[in-house]
Image (cartoon, one colour):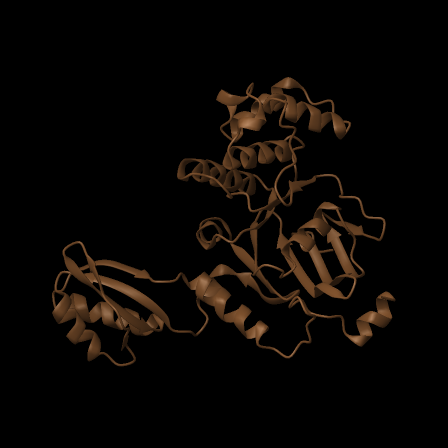
Length: 334
């Protein structure tokens, strides 16, 4: 195994009856990196996370985690922690008691100082002795993260860790994950929040109907040759509009919106052509007060790639999930 990889998966296939959850998935996750996992509902994200945590086993393919080959009788290697489908908590216990109970279930004689440290890391010290039945969704997510941190993981696997977090809570969790990666922990997180992925991840894997449609650096994904819609707010909307209309390969998009006493200009362009427009605006003495994509490059690429996959010819069952091919049925005996 490549010593720089925390996860190396090749050709991972997992079926549930006639439904193919994962169909030949490859995945590389570098050590000390935060790797995003995205896809529409039913894409196979939760199944893949479950494989990494030892909650299920693959029907075929090879998987190596933290240098350890994973076989049929899979138990998560030491150093792997996290949660899928939300953390499991005892509502009648306090936050501190929950962490002590979870540690005891693992046979871990975790000292109270370590529990206090985990609670402090996720910002729950003030509610450590309150019962979790009164916790908000965001607080439960943070307590689940604290439970995962108890073991000092080298690989952290998280399913929607920002779900239910308010802005302050999200900032706190982002800080924890960034620090862990900086200290050498690898993180795999699934999220529907593109802003979370863009803020945290250096690499991302996009799944659609059980297959990988993209895997690589975020910058590479955002640099794909596709036009995006942008919103521009300038000091002189009318002059900016005329200048945009006369700039090659800049397309004026339909619709405008009042913004801060002026009119937002909507254009569609590739990045190099947008740069040309910005240079022209500056040359003409028009101040550019705001420039932002209407949809982030990651979200635009995600939508384009998953829609391409959906429009493919793979046969599906009545629920819309892909069916196993004849070869897969013969291989798995199902």
